[in-house]
Image 1: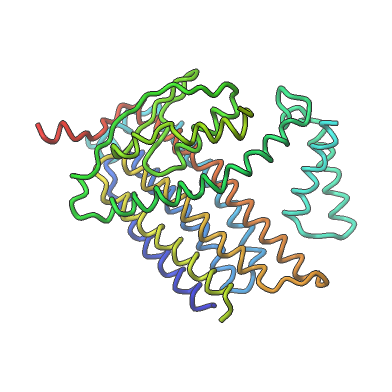
Image 2 (image 1 turned 45 degrees about the vertical axis):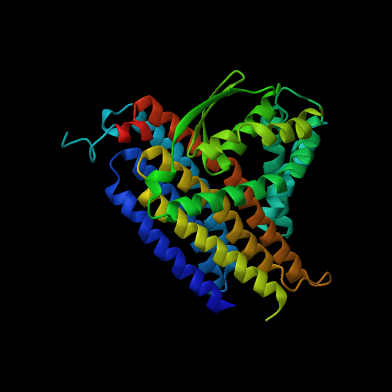
Length: 97
Length: 159
Length: 116
């Protein structure tokens, strides 16, 4: 069963790498937030799988719960923050436009 | 009554999260739950001091399996679109506006969350009884509000 | 290899498959709003499938007499709690991001503009 968990964890790493393309290259700030959200959801699962592989599930589960909540707060907070900035509209960070 | 139910829900969460059953941790947990109950007993039963809130939760539970099936089917469709080599020919994003006949706030929020959870449609705005939904394909747009609204009405409003 | 482990493996790998599809989706879709569809699927379905698999695997040998298996049941309930939280929080976050995008004024990609 550990093999299945290991394969799943590797698959999650691959998909995190794909999602990182959007985080790095997204045209607007909101695109990056969506990418970070997806990476956060994948990290929640990855943490629990790591807990199984290290045989310490109850500790890693608490971290995973905190991470899931943090993921939600991050989306709400960063969205509110960038709502008042012109830079959310286009360009990279807004400096070059 | 509301305070008692709040206290026991809080205590259930404490036991679920902490998992330590010695005297010290249980005492601290009971104290914390008591404080939270005193300060915010009117938040959990906002606007409704009776227990109808818990009954609604029970009714929503019957609606979840159907919603999960819908999410699965719609996800397969989006997966097909995302992997299709000529994706731009298939998708046809559009804004859809419709009025709902759901009356109370809880069922409207449930409908908005369900629409967002189902891949292919996102609730953009909800003003009064008018929903603005962003649909990815024509097929997804045609399915609104449809069966989802009926099921929520049956589950939460008792029609 | 019991039947439960087969179910767990299928659910978990299906969840990972949908995670990869979601990641490919947010890279490939043409505009911001359609990327949200792929991201929402990733959150809702893939998280639920993988967490369900882990919760099932956690109570694989449940025994009413042992304290240890009751503790395992508690851990599984915590995982179910994460699923419920994600199902309440993820649409709210998506809604906040969409509304912010509308207020900021990001243009939706439309088929008509492309054909013109």
